[in-house]
Image (cartoon, rainbow, N blue to C red):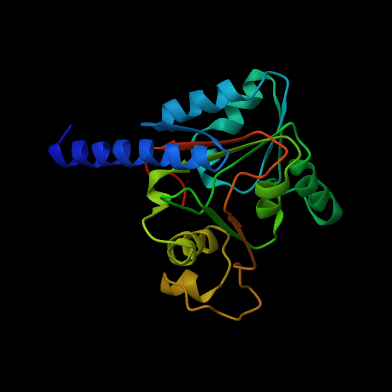
Length: 217
């Protein structure tokens, strides 16, 4: 491992473990792991065999290969990234994600003090992150950590998460062509619903797994 990679890893380890303590104070069951493989193993340990798992539009969860791993183990995976879905059938699938035994997601940004921020177009993901009926698991790469306050986290989402997401979805927003947010007011705008989790949602078990790698947007 080159020295610069070692220092980056050491920084993530130091920061991640400090953030775990902050998240625990906010009511989460928190864990820092150094690698994506360890994150995948940790998620699989948290999800019982036979449990249904709702997965919204998360690139992180798909990068980790968790859909395939859960399906291979026999878990029922409910997700809407199916091009054959349309109309009311797609809306039902979006709703069903929230009703599963486990809601498995990432987030667009997290502050060092443990405030989680997410911005959505349809609103299904922010709804699940706040109100999913079962256990909620947030898997967040350390690339999404913001050293400032909520405003800094929102700026991160709009300038570093939304543009590549709009590109991925082939949505013709200004940020998809410019690479940064101009607070557009076009019909195609994807920043429509925002969630700021100041504490873990009450009434259910909430886990945060911080990962010392770049994951998602």
